[in-house]
Image 1 (cartoon, rainbow, N blue to C red):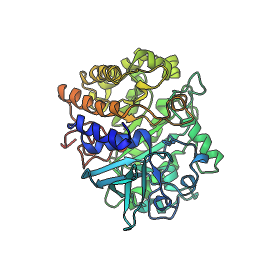
Image 2: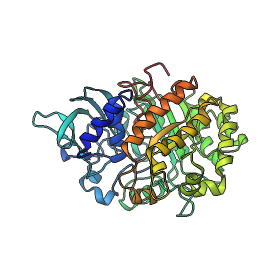
Image 3: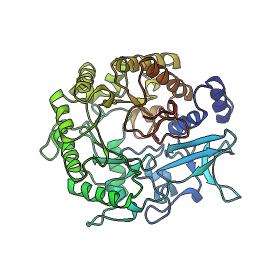
Image 4: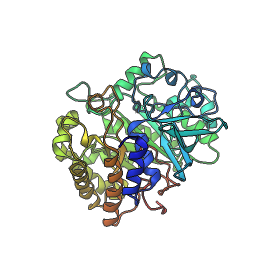
Length: 436
C-alpha cells in the first residue's frame, strides 16, 4: 500500500465484521502516535491526566529520545470520536512514536484531532486530571506514582514490584522492557518506587476512594515482575497476596481484585483466592512451543511451557474457569527472525491456543505488542507485526469465543464498539455489546 491510509481503508473493506474503530486502534497500538506540543501536558498540576508509565514504557523511543514528550508528558490515553469514519467512542492507550504517520494536534479551529498522513480522521478527547491525582501521600509521593489509574479510570494499576527477577538476556522475556523502564526512569531522576510498601498502597487507595465520588474505579490489578526467589522474605504468592489481603480488609468489596503473576502451583493459587483475589491472570505470552522457549527463556527454564499450561488449568479449578484470564502478547508470533513469516500461519497458531483454553471455559485476553526499542524483539522488529495480523486476530478471537459459548471476561468493563474502556488492545471493542 502506498500510504498508511490506503492500508487501513483496505483492511476495513476486507474485514467489515471487524469494527472500523478497532482497525484504527490496533494500528495506533502497534505503531504508536506522535504529539504536537499543543497536545502535551505538565506532569503535575495540569488539566490532563499524564502518562504514568505504570509498568512498561509502551513507547517506540527511549525517554532521552522523546524530547519534549519526555518533559511535558503525553496523556495516559486518548478517546477518538467522529471524523470521516464516523468513529464511535474509542479509548486508546498512548504509545509514543515521533515518526508515526498518526499525529495528535490542535487544528485552526482550536479542536484537538488525530491526523493520519496529514488528514484529520477523528476528534480527540483527553483524559481529565482526576481529583485524586491532585493529592499526595503524607510522605509527599503522588497518587499517580503509587496507584495510577488506566482504562479511563476503570482500573487501578498497582505495580508493586517494578523489576523482574528474570534478568539478563538468558532469562528476560524478549519483548519485555520492565527492567529497562525501571532503569530509564531512575536515570531521568523520576520517582519510580521499586517495591511499594503496603501502607503506601492503602493510603493511595484511601485517597482514590474518598475523591472518586462517581465510583469510576471498579477494579484493581496487583502485578509486577516475576519472583523466582523472594522479595522481602516472601515468595511470589505471599508477596503479592499480602497486598490483596490488606486491601480487602481495609476496603471490603470496594473493587474487583485481580492479580497478574506467574502460573503458580495450585497451593499458591489457592492462597491468592484466600487473600481475596477474584481474578487470576497467569499469562501464557505466546502459544507456539518453539517461540515460547525462545521468547520466554526464564519462564521455560523455571517452569516450562507444558507445566505452565497445566497450572493454568489447575487454577481454573480454584477460581472457576471464567475467573482465570491469561494474557498473550499479540504480534510477537510474527517477530523476525524466528517468528511465523505469514499471517495465515501466525493466526493458525494463535487460534490453536485460543481453542485449547476456550474449549475448557477459560477466556484469554491479549495485549497488542508494542516493539519497545530496548528489547531484542523490538530492536529487530521496529514496525511490529502486520496490521492484517491484528485485524484477523480480532475476527478469530470472537469466532472461537462464540463457538465455545463464552462471553466477554469479567473485570474489563463493558464490551462493544463505543462502550469498551480496555485500552491496550481492541478485543473488548470487537465483542458484542452485551453485559459482561
